[in-house]
Length: 115
Length: 115
Image (cartoon, rainbow over all chains, first blue to last red; front, side, top):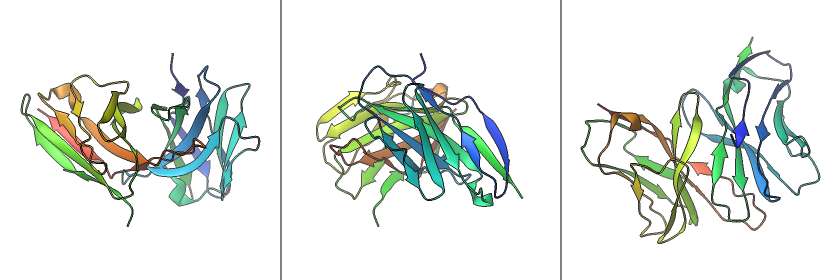
């Protein structure tokens, strides 16, 4: 089974609107971490936000927030007030277990922000 | 500047010709890992290392070797490259935090083509 599933290969959003990128994960380990990374067309991987499995509050970092629904095993990324510079590929990732060793990435969502 | 440096950034080679992609980090991170990125598949972990002389397989280790003789360096070796190893490769490093928030810092990527 896929550890990380991103079901939206591509999405469009109007500039200044909010957008939600979906991510579901699969693990039976009680300890895990969830990450979102952004990959612009230039290719580098940029860390956006982190949520630990024991964190009570949803993580927020500026315009990024993570909608963490543990029972549903979902970790959706919400970008508020989209900007043209948000156009990029977005990857959801999971670090599973206490050993901090294996990371799993989803297949990504290509976000296009329209002016 | 804190960074992960990969070389070469671009390489075209032929089947069977051994090659090494170097990776070096200047952040004194314990954890280092290699990933390959293929369209529609996201990033998949090849190998990882928790510290010097400690390495282990990720999800797609076949056809690759690694070594960790020094903390800062983690080279990826393709002993006999094949066309199915044509891909974009990323090296990443992280501190190992007790909280689990071990954010990966990525290199710029190495685009490898095997003819």
